[in-house]
Length: 311
Image (tube, rainbow, N blue to C red):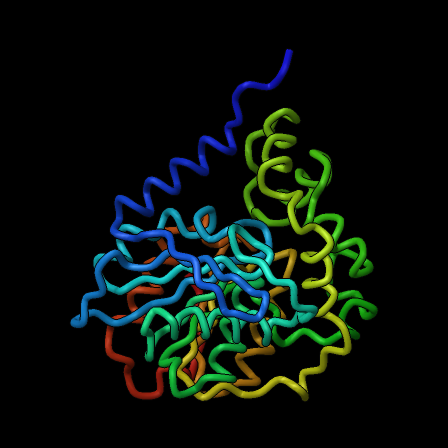
């Protein structure tokens, strides 16, 4: 019997409806160089509100990563939620694969929508892009949130056993899962608390809908993150920065959070979420929102980056 219902497509439709109901609209920007960026933007820009850019990770498009946060954040910000290149409806014919290129594409798209100043929140791969945005465009980025994003990793960390995987190739097989077994492995690595067993038919449907497009390009994005990466090459961003991490993260171990805090010094605040893995947006959405609101809206106290915090 042919498949007639896709749970994943249905959920995708619901997320699209939620974004629209919250006051956002879908917009596509042609950068005129072979690159097209899709972004959810405010239906009506409100000049009395600050601007917030939410950047997703490798495992999803923008809607799937940020759906739980859209309604409360839209009430306080002009929210922009781009799909990164090779995700959702964003694509490019150009050969670049670095997070610096992703950041440039996001910035150009935002400039096309008239955005001049913003705060940026990036989770996992999105944290790499958000950090690069802040480094390349310091005049435009006011505050930065880096969530579970190993921007301080070095290529030697893999050989020295920091990660659960033994090679970049093994990491890609899990992060870009193409079988139910690999997707289960990804979920196990991403969550502190085991989820209920998921039937293979559901996992296969998710892979078919969400994980098969631009597969080679996404592999190249991951390779570019790791290749020849050295902490000494990482610029120190100057914006106030919130580093927020799951204490039990098995994808980017918490040592990378401490390393980033040391790299940025007094400019950064580190928050560790107890009994939480890599998927902080799904495991601890209320706690994540609380810290986003506090950091992005409330005035920064003197010396806000001087210490750490554990929830």
